[in-house]
Image (cartoon, rainbow over all chains, first blue to last red; front, side, top):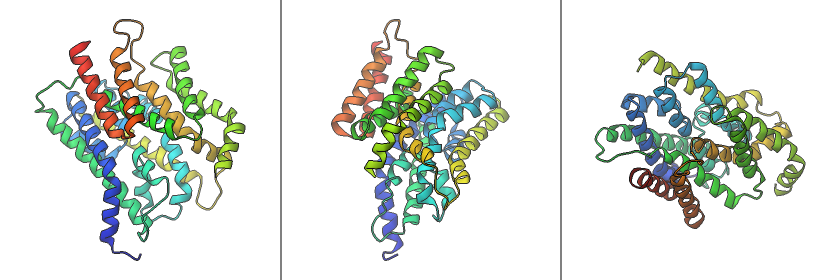
Length: 234
Length: 108
């Protein structure tokens, strides 16, 4: 390391600022929803600390409120969070010999992945320390937002009906961004249309597993076409 | 609310999420090359899964009866338009959510 630690901290903090805004706002939305379901600030704090997966926590509010079975909760978590398998797969090489590896893996959310997956660390900074700090700052923002939301939810003077759309908006924004920057739009299109077809065929209660199978199948069949382009792009 | 069951639900969600994040690191040990098929899936699946989650979030939207999912369509169009224009995710998410809240509370 050629620079003192203070500059790594500053660089990681700066890198996590865009995530801060999003996590605090979405965390507040989560805290408000959870309080609305009858679960106070201790629950917001525990869920954001231990689960630390935004969309799953939103879905978790309805699992808690509806008193879901443990098996249903486990299956739902697999379906909603299966994409993390693939984030991890694409980071195996990068995190191979990383220090702080267990926490880096635990804290690999969509947003942290999107910051760290390009593999760049500031010049002169210890890459492992930088990744640790970015990951930890991100989780701090998320926990802070959740706790704030729970506290605000008790005193907020206007109706929060419709705030659950923040989760939908999050995915639509990611999808749009991805659509505009992707070198190939077929994977995104496969996910959207394949899921829509399964929703129409199987209904809103049981379409998610068929959708995941169909998506994997279609992408496997597209591999001769997409895989070659991936190779060429490298 | 049943405290014990709720705590167990949170524990299950936390453990399964952790398992999903750690599993690839346990299966594909360092040093061994990742099978090309798995690497390919790692490249193309994230984009597809985001598409899937968009549909998942909108799964309970009723499009066959009034207001035909109008609040969802309008708010979603705001998010897409703003994102394409400004490329600022937080701005798109916040604006779309506020538009949706105003629509369901005041208009529809």
